Structure formats: structure tokens, C-alpha cells
Length: 203
Image (cartoon, rainbow, N blue to C red; front, side):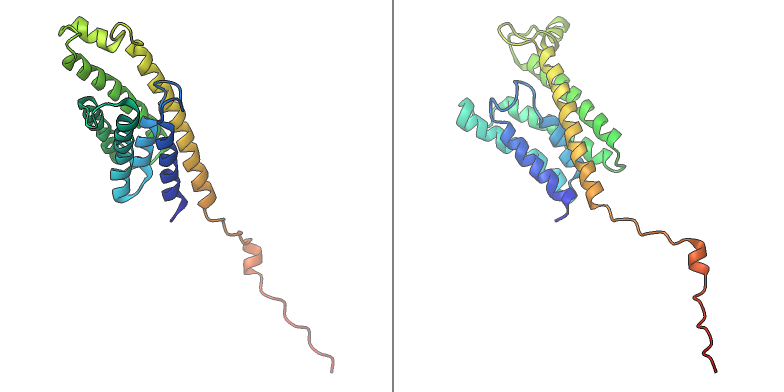
């Protein structure tokens, strides 16, 4: 298996381990970056299935063994649907690969997740007033007794940018290591110069 294939798989395993509470600062996650980057680089069905499957499996395990929440919490299902858009966006951008597209895609995806997830929270949570002011509250300060949602969005963007840089750097290093060594160039004079003729033997 080529390095550019197994390296994203290793990074996803590391990401899955990092999701255990306390491993990273609160709301500072590698989820958006690694989901997008793995979908961007993994070929074929692996790019479609494995990144999102990693998110879903780790979410279910955390609900079962840590948070004591329902396995299929409606908020999780909503998040999975949003993250599935990450995979679609990554595959679309991967038609022309560049590191600029990776950074653009992950940051756009993180902003999309922030806007959509908080808008859904505003729609379903009865505490929020169903007005423009209530929607702005959901996007900025959130609910009393909890950290403001704008802080969550900022940490999400910072985490996404950091882990995208680490992932892209790892892939760039992998491509440099796997690149074939250039063949030595032959000077034109040396190539065209005929071999020396043998000197005549003495009579």
C-alpha cells in the first residue's frame, strides 16, 4: 500500500484516539480538518466511507461509554448530515488538487458547520425565541450557563487551521519521499562525442 494511502488511515486512527475527552482542549478538535483532508486524499470508496465512518463510530462509542446519552441522539444525526457535506465538498475540490484548495475547503466547511449546527439548535431548542434576535443569540452568546457559541466557532476555526496544516504537511512530506529521483542529465557534448578509435599496432 502506498504511503499516500496508509498515511491518512494512520492519521484517522490518531484522530479517533484524540476524541476521548481531555485529550485536547474543549472545542478544539481535529474533526473537521481530518474528515475533509482524508476525504480529499483517500482514493475511491475509502475517501467516501472511512472519514465519516470514523466520526460516526467514535460518536456512538462516546455516547455509550462516556456521556450516557442515546446512541442515535438527534443532534448527532444532524451533525453527521452536515459532515457528510464535508465529504462531498472534499471530493468535488479534489478534482484539481492543490494545498490552497485543502485550506479553503476545510475553513469553509468549519464555518458551514458552525452556522448550520447553531441554526438547527435555535430551531429545535425551546429556550431560544423563534425570532431574528433569538437566532443571533444562538450564533453568538448561546444559552446562559454555557460558553458562548462564538467562542466555540473561533476554537473550531483555529483547530481546523492547525490540523489542516499538520495534515497537509504530512502529505507533502509523503509525496516528497515517494517522488522518484531524477535521472542524471547527460551533457550534449558527451553524448555526441564518438568513442576514441584504437591506435594502430606497430608493424
